Length: 69
Image (cartoon, rainbow, N blue to C red):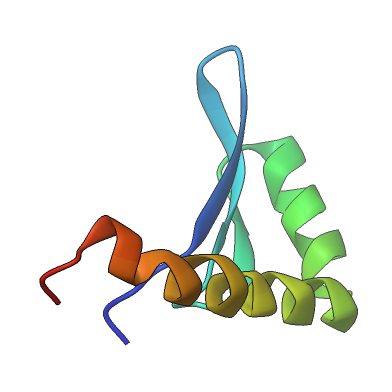
C-alpha cells in the first residue's frame, strides 16, 4: 500500500494531467488536461492497465530498489 505509481504528462514544463494509482484515476491540471482526464477516466480498460502496471513494474522491482525491505 505504500507504493504509488504516477504517470504525468508535461508540455512546456507545465503538468497537463496525471494518473495516480492511489486515486485510481486521471487528474487534469489545465483546461485541456481536465478534458483529457475525463476522457481517459471513462475508459475502464485503460485504468485497469495502468493499475496493472503498478503491480508489474513497481511491485516487481521493489526488491531491486530497496534491498533491505
